[in-house]
Every structure is written in structure tokens, then in C-alpha cells.
Image 1 (cartoon, rainbow, N blue to C red):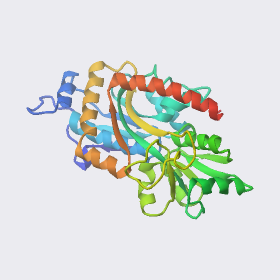
Image 2 (cartoon, rainbow, N blue to C red; image 1 turned 90 degrees about the vertical axis):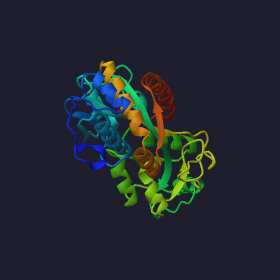
Image 3 (cartoon, rainbow, N blue to C red; image 1 turned 180 degrees about the vertical axis):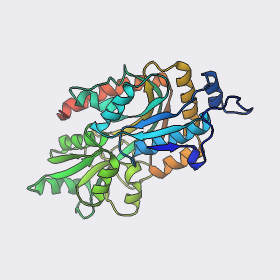
Amino acid sequence: MMTINRFGRALRAACLCLPAAGLSGAAGAAGAAGAYPDRPVRIVVPFAAGGPADILGRLVAAGLADRLHGTFVVENKAGGGGNIGTAQVARADADGYTLVIGYIGPFGINPSLYKKQSFDPVKDFAPVSLLATSPLVLVTRPGLGAGSVAELVKLARSRSMALTYGSGGVGSANHLAGELFKTATGVDLVHVPYQGIAPATTDLLGGQVDLMFNGISSVLQYVKAGKLPALAVTTAARVDSLPDVPTMEEAGVKPFDVSAWFGLLAPRGTPPAVLASLEAAVRDTMNSPEASARLAATGMQRRLMPQAEFGRFIESEVKLWSGVVRASGASAD
């Protein structure tokens, strides 16, 4: 658990009862919402520390602390492919003091992957804003001996024991990308789920798993340093941070277009004024020079989306991934 406040400065008071002139629109909205926040706000990251969801959670917490003049606490609640921490927020009081970093897993994939899920990503949450997307890149452990997707497929077919692929958890985008790859190529891979991208990436670097469809934000530094071979990106077009790495379709695996996404949500029933205050502060935070620099360094791409549009987006993701899960035959039960 970590208390965040404007990129390392000392915390300001939890509430400024007399707003000074010149405060941003976000801070003004906070005042209109009844001096929100007047006590610490929890932002639950449903994955282990160190991954892209955690990076965004701490970035957003720092920005909200500065703009809304309060204390924002990041809590990592890993497990269940993001379901455990997400379910905790679904059951929390709808007062704006418990938020969650939403991820494509629990909010798009898991409803079809798990037969029993203790929350509904559409009915139980109030969207605040989409934050960013993270393209995936197929990387292999050092020394695996595959310099391209074609060579990887050939290697996988020649082995008596299946290659292993790691993921940030059952239902994560990296999990489903691996399942899609298996279906598209006909190779046998064994899924090794972790409680977050960071420990999975550590084991990949150490050679404990053979490959991953990892978020660029998690492996960019290792790819550029030559520590992890990058074979292909999973998006329809090449990405700016890895311009020399082909797309999966360019490598001969078609169709293939997968990208992880992250957003901020609150429990359904959270007061509209609080949601509006949070949305304005998030927009200001994500458009800041600090956020732009952080996103560029990790390979994530800013993608803001207001409350209503984000809600419709989640509905469309649930429908999209239900078809993908059925086609892949993947299951978490």
C-alpha cells in the first residue's frame, strides 16, 4: 500500500475549505461536490505492483492528489485474473472513496471466461474515464533460439514437450493473446498464469517460462537493452516505440489484433458530482507533461474517454471477448 501525492511532494491537506483563486476546473468541481475528498481515497489496482495497471494507478493517484487536494492511497489486490480486487470495489460504498483501475481482463474477458463471477462489469460500476491502451508484444526468453514468429512455430512443433507462456493471470489480455496464437498456428503451448505482469516478466527474464505476449510498457526496456527478443506486436499497425518489430499479421498470423486497455471506475451509485470531479481531474492529469513523459517511456498510449462513452465501450468489449473466448475454448473453471 502506498500513499501518493504529486510525484513525491509532501501531502497537502486532505481538504482546502477556502479554495484559492486560480484553482483548476477540476478543483472547482471538487468544491461543488461538497469538498470532496475530505478523507483518504483508495484506488485499488487488482494486480501486483510493478505492472502497467500499477504504473497508471500511481500516476493517476498522484495527479488526483494534486488537483483535488486530498490523499489518494494505492492498494494492490492481486489474484483471480484481476477479479479479487475488482470485486472488492464492486461491494464498496458508492461514495467516491473507493475506486478501481479497470482492466480488459475483469471488465471485458473474464465475464465469459469464468462461469461464476461475483460482479457485473456493466451493472456494478460507474465509469470515470478510459485512461490508456498498451499494445502487446510477443517476446521470448533469452536463448530460446527463435528469431521470428515462423521460427517459433517451427520450434514449438519440433519439441516433444510444449513450450510455456506466462501471463499476468487467467483472463488477462496476455492470456487470451496466447490462446489466439495457439488457435491460429495450431501449436501446443502451456499457460502459466501469475498474479500480475511484473512477476511473470521476472520469470521470463530468468528463463522460467519460454515466451509471453507482454504489454510493451512492461518489457520495452528489456527489448531495447537486448535482454528479451521481440518477435511481433499484436496490433494491426506497428507501434512507434518498436518500429522495427513486425505486426503479427505481417509475420503471417492472421487475423490478429489485441491490445490491453485501462480505465478508472467507481462503484455504481457514486454521486454524479463526484464522478464529474474525478473525470475532470483525470483528464487534466493524463494530458499533463508528466503523464505524457511517463506514457512515452513505457510504450503505453493515452486514450481518454468520458463517462458515458466509456460505459458503452465496456459493453462492447464484453460482447467482443465473449466470441473470442468461445472460439478459443479457454476457461478459468
